[in-house]
Length: 171
Length: 261
Ligand SMILES: [Zn+2]
Image 1 (tube, rainbow over the protein chains, first blue to last red):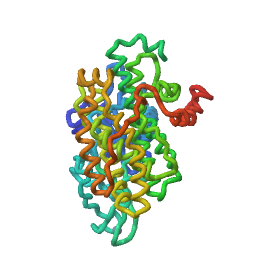
Image 2: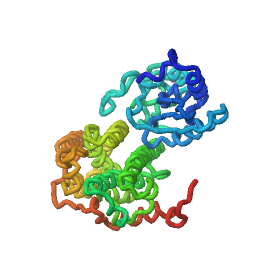
Image 3: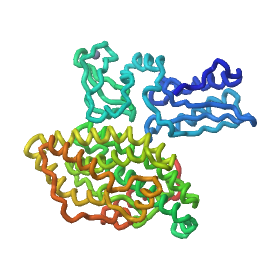
Image 4: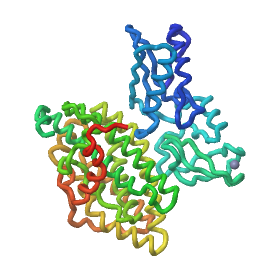
């Protein structure tokens, strides 16, 4: 799902997207909503109204309300007037939308990024993905629980360095 | 709410009823799972059950928001969940069954539901109703994890100790009588199936049954005989348990209407 390409877009739209770069996920503050792929669209209407479209990671993600408020705050401080935030469910968010830089930032933050291209039904009774320990780089890891501290994470542990860690699980 | 709903066409009324069934299942089961917060056998499981509860609550919110729009009487998702009486609730009886502080009961209830819910959401991906299909596309990813989790526990408990095996078999024998309602057809379900909005309930049975057989075999558990099946929840005929759930869940909005965080 490619996002807005900045090449041919008018400068005011570039500026809007750059301003939105300041909006981070409240639960994983090293990632912007653009890194996560939650930011689906941003446009400026004829009447100068800004419409920002976002999509949730999980149906019950409690961060969505905060993200909406944060978008309005950041754009308000940047001088934008009327801001409307729309939430869409379609197409459904997938971990494959996580940007390359987002994956790197996750790893540096101590969260193992999701295995790539693993969003299929394999999650059901499928083999566990190979997950690299974000602390020591070992592949000798195991899942403790498919459910973690937030809806998007699973609990894992490393058999090499014995540290527990979060895995950003695939959906 | 009866007066307001008279304005809907028969098609809208059926869709509204159908959405309430979907949404109420999710809300009531979410509440039951929420009762485990701080009480689950181990910390990881406490977290897992609450994650599942949160997914279901989120799904319910998407569905109820839509239901309120279909009804067209100005009820948002909160009004539908917190201001409806028990006889207006449309959930299946299975999801309101109490935990009885017995983890085996919670897992069996969840497994029987998840195995059905997975097939339902998969079928809803093809819904002629674009909004419902979009909600399903989101939900099915979550429900896949739910089913995997409850299936693993069925196997762990069933193929565990004599104590865990006995408790999970007993819970299965006890809750089995609520499984029939999941596949019951009535006017609402028939109308949804005819319009291509939802699957015919009986069309989900074969796949559900196969999942149940596969997991029970691995769990060394016996599938109970299909005896008399208890139903009525989807038409508002509930057991005593739902009233206690609603009393707790609706207290704040009933006592302080329109209270906000
Ligand atoms: Zn390690």
